[in-house]
Amino acid sequence: MGNLFKRINDVITANISDLIDRVEDPEKMIKQIIHEMEENLGRAKEGVVDAIASEKKLRQVSCPRCRKSADWYDNPYRPFCSERCRLIDLGDWADEAHRIKGEPAEGGDGDNRREQPESDTP
Image: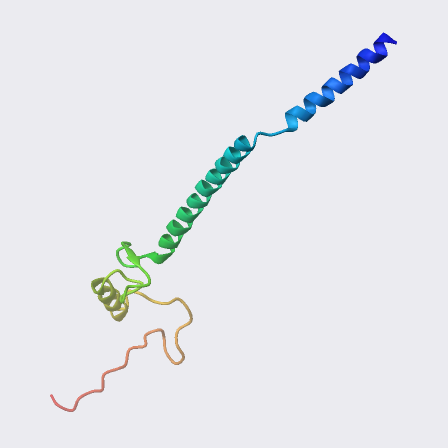
């Protein structure tokens, strides 16, 4: 019978200890909540920084002529970095340094230049 009372005493003591452990200090709870909020704020700031960096990368393009980085949105010469690169590229197209691959145009042998009319003057 003594063992039964000892066992009941142990169970009651364990339940009381468990209840005491569950009672939380409000000050500790608030400190823990503030700490968690600060951690979440730090992660949110990192996310914003990453998003801004990604947006800036998307705004930048590489000049097809000189490979220099150039802004896409505020650049009147886009995709080129400057008027100089734009004009050099235009000259290359005019000199036929650049060509678009494909079938030759109809009625030609691939040379689309106009023939100069023969002049009557010597």
